[in-house]
Image (cartoon, rainbow, N blue to C red; front, side, top):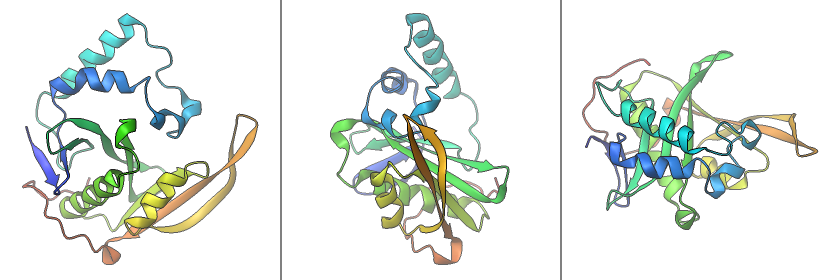
Amino acid sequence: MTTLISSPRIILRDRLPSDADRYIYWLDHGEWLEYDAPWEDNFGPLTSERREELRQGFIESCGGEQPCPRRRAIIADRENCPLGWVNRYRLEDAPGTLYVGIDICEDDRLNRGLGTEALGLWIDYLFAHTDTQRIGLETWSFNPRMIRVAEKVGLELERVKRHEIEWQDKAHDLWQFCLRRSEWQGGEKAGSCERASQ
């Protein structure tokens, strides 16, 4: 198992084949589904065939050499039980900003500060292993928990795109946060990995 970075309560690590069943379970269970762009419904009702296809794809993604820095990581507790994930990506209209995402998928672990801790670690890791000067995060006006997490780790609200999407007969705003390298006060040290720009 490769641990990327850790704190007293949680670990960010590579995926393991043993995480596959929990990952598949999360795809149609948990409060997180109500907040992470629920209109996309990427997985829908999972048939047994689709579950097996996703399971095999997950296991295959665990093999081979992983990019550095990682594009995603599992959030696990100190007993190595998976709780969710973090990821990174870029947007075409903001190529100079590295965007991050996070989901705590175990409902009984919500509201304990684990998401805030995991996001802080992920930002530490990405600033340590990239030359990016900006890390961004986008969330929706109906997700006050994610807004609080962004604010707690020091991301600043840059823009609110009002009525960005219509869903369930309501207009929702897109909140865009940003953190510059010069503003980051993270102190955790990431595991060994060569510095990269991607």
